[in-house]
Length: 139
Length: 139
DNA sequence: TTTCATTTTTGAAATCATTGCAAATATACA
DNA sequence: TGTATATTTGCAATGATTTCAAAAATGAAA
Image (cartoon, rainbow over all chains, first blue to last red; front, side, top):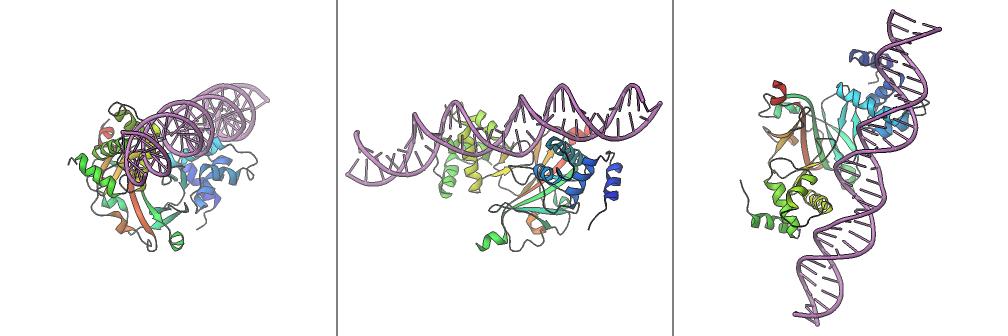
């Protein structure tokens, strides 16, 4: 489901974030991507389109979005962070062989499973699964 | 539930890992700790007891244990890794304010919630929750 | 026990994703 | 237009983790 630039822009404004050219481009890229890009990937993808872009800006902007709850940061791979603009409730699987990270649907929200979570204010939840993907099992 | 050194030693042997002095000490420390230590913390805690110990050994050994499935590695904090010797099924919560990482019990195994996971071989699962802990909410 | 091969440990240097910083640029508003 | 504020930029610094080759420990065979 493609979202228009205008809608994304409004979403930034609603979150109290000024929609600069760089911010809007980065937001659009992460939201439309299905591939959990790293900051480096976002940077490489947008530097031509934007004429000039700094990797520092990408890092700062992604952090800004994460803090605002607009995207999430994944630490499923311990060697780098990547980002996820998909707002639906889903788990992540990382293949130990090929490194691929894929979304897996959930039957229900996993927060409901937590016991003794009373008194905690939970703002983010991530379920990380690791192992072998179907492609790598075949080989 | 305190486990004897002999039992831990046997567990290493059963996993095909030679129980050197360093390995056994590191294994015991991580298994008995309730505090999700980092490699650095393990190193600081054991260097005196062992006379000499290298941080590299700690890193290598922890990786060895993780690969053997004896302990798990947590990446809930994006700035460092920590390790968990608690083998029961539980979730982890990280307070965004004080940084504390605590265990939270689960009603059931969360893998049962995953849809479309057929064809995947899952060897590790971690549920990470973030937000504010009761102590930090009070303030 | 001695010897030799293999495994493990060690410490220093290198790596690399991420952040700090201060200058340059862009934007909003009077 | 001018001025204050917000944003971007690039380079240097940071720090957790890894690489690497040498030293030490261990196990098996003689």
